[in-house]
Image (cartoon, rainbow, N blue to C red; front, side, top):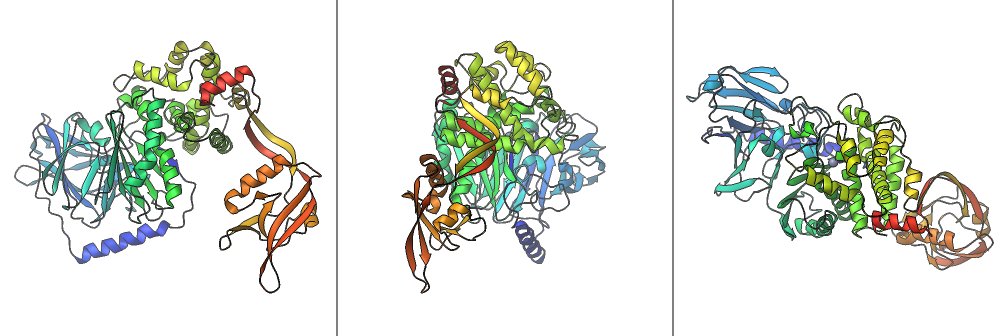
Length: 633
Ligand SMILES: [Zn+2]
């Protein structure tokens, strides 16, 4: 998964108030769900629901176990699901769990713990019936990361992460699942699951076992879908955007280059026949305060607040790239803990550096390697990973962080996206170097997927040895010191292998613009000096004033769109003592805008740069070789 917490939380109350309105309306119209439909499927767990009605905002669900030879049955909801690394206790989302026999009489149900119910006379059970509350708006359950949750909005949209509303009978986890959904005639349920329409208003989804069922989310709404082919793989996009900021055609256009880039990066073919991207937008922030996506074998669920199209589409590109590369790991390269996933007693792996770190690194690395972003943008992403990682404990061995991610090291978890990604980068650089530019991390990942794949796991304790055996002994040393051990990553040394210079707390002398902080004047579309505070001796010699609108400096454009690039260019092109002409627009006493040419000799100032990372303009031959293999630059 990937979670983004870096935006403002100003709309938090919106959903809550909307929910109240929906609730009131429901109570007034006395909508009562009918649960008069239940199990008829043979040798499959049969789940049924009807999304044309809600009870107090909750969805009525029936679950029939089908044929089984057990006296007592235990119905379990997951405590946690793969990819989330948080305990959610989805049992808390179920209310009024009742058991019925074939005659419609109730059977005793004993709640064993937060997530499990026992039906002592399980051999008599026809079906269970209960209400499922939506994680998006239910105040009682844990704050569930929205991409792992459920959203029920009558006549608008339903998002099913089935593990948050349907469980499994212990001992029957491998039974097939049949999921019948009654829906409004004009609704479409997008999903990677096998499906057929039973009639105009009923869909039947089928899955082979609970793992497949839990792994395939469904999103219902009035259809806004698009699809495109990437080689042999069909990519489908389905969107629910209540504020209309996105539509499926627009998102497909943005995702196409990402998916084609991924195909090339993975050696020419995508590893799945189809991939479904479900995007559920919210008006305001959700319950959990974060947004992002969760990965699945054949799909991903992406939940985000409605925002500007450009910001949304860039975020969707990065996030979908991340989720898609989860097909490589952990879906195709994973340890025994994920292979036999225990939804109620999960064992953590020590390899989050791989599952989340390498995946996050790959999502950006693919984009630079395939020419979708330029090398400077890639370095600036690396720079922000380094600076964000510095907020976490750098001497906590990463394998320990990983093993304790659910409990003791919960507060360090987010570092899997920062330092985890940097571990991926260092391993990539090390491989490019040791192999004399013959291969890097993508090639290693492909060899690992061939060796393991979805049906074969590695042993958690052995992976480092296996990778070293497949590559170089130095790689074992790298894992020992920087992933299993407490030593911080030798970023400077490793980046230098590719002719990238990383410097910290660097004292530099550079040209000044005048010491002022300009702000954007939207009306005039100019950068404006909003306060005279900070104006230095160069600014005073020029004679800048509060209210001046910046036009150009030595003919370099200083409009808002070009401002930071323009300032950089000015600093690079001129030196102290050069003639400088700053053109500004200034209002006169009559309120008319007049152009002024302010002149002075360029001056320098001393500044400390906490972190500087840049390509060396003249790398040596060795560095050129490594850099070429690394990012094709
Ligand atoms: Zn992830």
